Amino acid sequence: MTEAILEPDLPIIDPHHHLWLRPAAMMANLPPPTHGFDKVTRRVPRYLLDEFLADLNSGHNIRATVFVQCGAMYRASGPDAFKPVGETEFVNGVAAECASGVRGDIRACAGIVGHVDLTLGPVVDEVLEAHQRVTDRFKGIRHSASYDADPNVLGPLARIGGGLYEQAAFREGYARLAKHGLSFDSWLLEPQLPELYDLVKRHEDIPVILDHVGTPLGLASYEGRREERFPIWLANINKLAELPHVNVKLGGLAMAFCNFPSFLSDPPAPSTQLAAEWRPYIEACIEAFGVDRCMFESNFPVDLGACTYPVLWNAFKVIAKGYSAAEKTALFSGTAKRVYRLDI
Image (cartoon, rainbow, N blue to C red; front, side):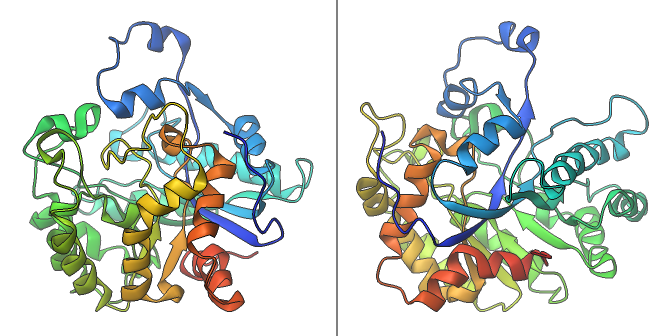
C-alpha cells in the first residue's frame, strides 16, 4: 500500500520503536508461527538502523525517536540483573551514530527506555545507575506486566503470571525510580488497567507512560468482544487520566492482540480504514488526558501487521485533521519531547 504523504512538513518525534536482530540459525529452529504476533515479527528478523532509517526517511518529517526495550543485545555474560544494560549500550551506539550527522538530520534513539527487573531488591539501584552511566539518553525503564488467564491471548508473549504490579517486591523497586529521576513505561492489557492505577497513584513523582492505549483485546477468548468491553476500557482510561503524572501513547492498535479487521488484511488497509478503526480509542484518550499528555507512536516494526510506516503516520494525521496547529504539535512531538526530556 503506497499513499501520498499527508502534511509532510509536520515535525514528528516517534516515541516508541524497537531495534533487533534475530540470527538466521535461531529463526530456522522455530516452529511454524500460529499466533498473529509471531506471524508479523517472523517477517522482520532484522530491524537495525539501516532498516529503521529507510522507514524514517519514507516521507514524513521525523525529527527524533525514542527506543523502547525489547530484549535486544543483552550482555552475554555477567550477573543476570545487569544483562539488560547491554541493550542500552547497543542503542546508545546507534544514537551516537545518528547524532554525529553522518546518517542525516534525524536523531534516532535520542531517548532510550531500557529494562530493569524491579523485583530484585536493593540491586535495582545499582542496575539503574549502570544504565545511567552509559548515557544521559537513558530516560526510564519499561517493565511489562502483560498477562491473561487465557494463554492464547498473548501467545509467545505469555511469559509471566498475573499480578506483577501488585507484588511487594515490585512496588519497592518501582519506588526507587523517583530518586534516579526516571520515568516508567507500562505495557499491560486492557483488563489489567486497574492494576496500573493502583500502582502509580501512590507515586506522583514518577512520570508514567501507558503504552498502546492500554491494549484493547479482540482475539482468543476476547474475539468479538472488543466493542463490548470498550466502556470498561474507557472507564479505566478516565480514571488513569485523573492522575496528572500519567501520560498515554496513542498507537499499538495494529498489533495482533487488538485484532482489528486491518490486521494482516490482504490487500492492506488504507490509512482511512485504519483511522476509522482506531479513532474511538485515540479520541477517547485525547479527550481524557488532553493533548499535552498524549503522543502518537509507531510501535515499529511490530505494527507492520497492519500497515507500513508512512501509512501508519498518515492514519494518525487523518485522525488529527481537525485539531489546531498547537494541538498537532503536542500530539506529534511536543508531549514526547517533554515526557522523555529530550534535548532536541
